[in-house]
Length: 221
Image (tube, rainbow, N blue to C red):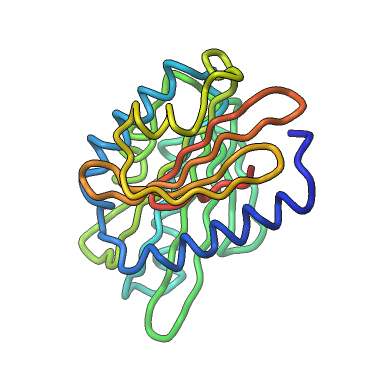
């Protein structure tokens, strides 16, 4: 996407890093996100043209890295059709026309850590559909499970009259903190159920984009 300056990129990165540090101890299920983020995503879809959405799952397990890597790989290869690409034995990717799934596995101390990122280009799949795919990766040994959700849309109902105030008020976002940048705004706030939300309204050369994520926006934009 064009039209964003290096200064703006730095501002966004700093803002997201500060927001991340303020997330604190995130709940395993990110609150009742199934209802709140799903409702917010549906609302934003009404005023935007779907570009992509995504879910990231992070967790740790006491199983060794070889066993966990093989287990995750077997499940994803069996349930997601696509081209398989392996960067190394503990980092691989599965992608097709709709989904891009990236997996990283590593060790720290006595634990194996897993990060799975699923980015979707098909508008018929909501973030909760993507979460349901990743939920099946979990087993009884999974600890410190964290889910992150993300949606990006372009223009449609987003025009010069669509403002941050409208976004905040129409979706009952509370305790907001806004940062103005050269081509738009980025902000944080809380949904009615207490979930932390990051959002942005950015104008690129190709048009205005609205981006939401909880508890942070994990995708690059």
